[in-house]
Amino acid sequence: MEREDRRLVIIPTYNEIENIRAILEAVMELEMAFDVLVVDDNSPDGTAAEVFKLIEEHPDRIQILQRQGKQGLGTAYIAGFRWALEHEYDYVLEMDADFSHNPKDLVRLYEACAKEGADLAIGSRYVQGVNVVNWPLGRVLMSYFASKYVRAVTGMKINDATAGFVCYKSEVLRTIDLDDVRFKGYGFQIEMKYTARLCGFTLKEVPIIFVNRTLGVSKMNTSIFGEAFFGVMKLRWWSWTRKFPKKGEAK
Image (cartoon, rainbow, N blue to C red; front, side, top):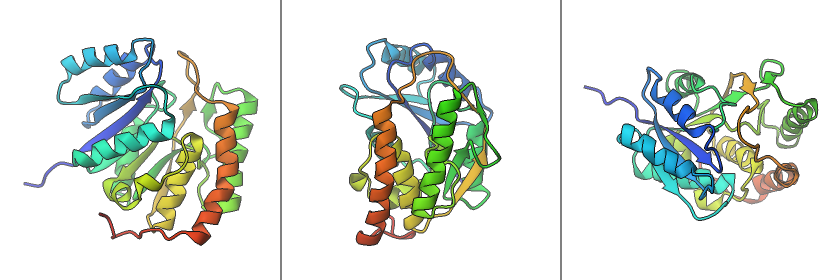
């Protein structure tokens, strides 16, 4: 009998006490089984304590990785990727804790990889127009044109390069040198997609509707956006000067 795919959702958290129980319960209620790893950066609001309560309710499905202090989105995901590979997951997904990403769309991202030929599936806000709800117009324009800028500089045919709702086949994460990933904020999301493309992996956008958080505080700031903006030029330079492993050369 063929083994069922093992799927892990990584959710980074910092002060998400208002959302964490609801988002984890929403994932647990899906008909398709997804395990969850919460990567918490020592949230002072008690996020981790709430996760431990949920672990008691779902001991085989929810885990937590606690880190000392706020270390950045990119490093949280890298830590989660390493944990996922150590525990032999087949598919690894990224998702925010604040319901800006609909947990029901996890199934569509997974199926894009498992059934539709993608190595990396991207939950895209911009592949079919602009599908963003309750964002200030300025932030919508900033995000939309940032992705246009990334596409122009890198040549990557992706409409939502900064998207943080994605599914990776584990082979992608085994192939990319995770020690060599440089960016920590939203530049990290661009770097991972661009590196996957340079390694020869297939990227596919899946249309989603992105809903701005209603509880908690956004972690977005101008320094994070600046890293992404200037980092794109570095990524293009690295594509000319660095050697990248290729698909099929996973460690």
